Amino acid sequence: EVQNCYFPLFVTKGALEAEEDHVEGFAPEVAWVTKSGETDLAEPIAIRPTSETIMYPEFAKWLRSHRDLPLKLNQWCSVVRWEFKYPTPFLRSREFLWQEGHTAHYTLEEADEMVYAILELYRRVYEEILAVPVIPGTKTEAEKFAGGLRTTTVEAYIAGSGR
Image (cartoon, rainbow, N blue to C red):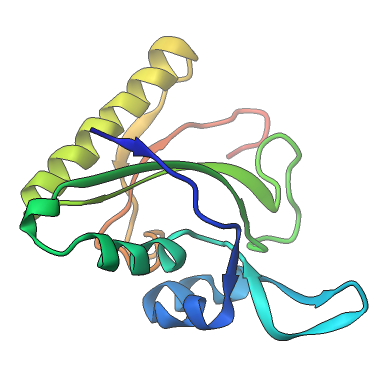
């Protein structure tokens, strides 16, 4: 069963840098809080560009044996990324609501089954409920999520924006 969760918006610099694969991919996009009012913080705090760096240390505490598997979490949260110069209102701004699933499985095959079942669910929601045609697939190596094995996606074309 999938459990809903919520992890903090702020991530310490140490926690963010502990996941080198993720930090490297997101470093140019991270927004940092350096002050509280007029007082400089002792250590900058990142506004979450991604959740792995704050979630996975907890996974390590929760998952003590194969009996704890699978772990299936769903989170809706705000994410902030400074990844482009000109945000497009209503399409993509610097802060956006993000739905993400994080799971841990006994085998890669079990994980893949979950990923592709959810990808099919997303496709059905877009096409059958929202009437938006999409193309499910896998991102290229250059586009894949920092630190990930692969990134799956459902892509839609917005005629007015050319994207």
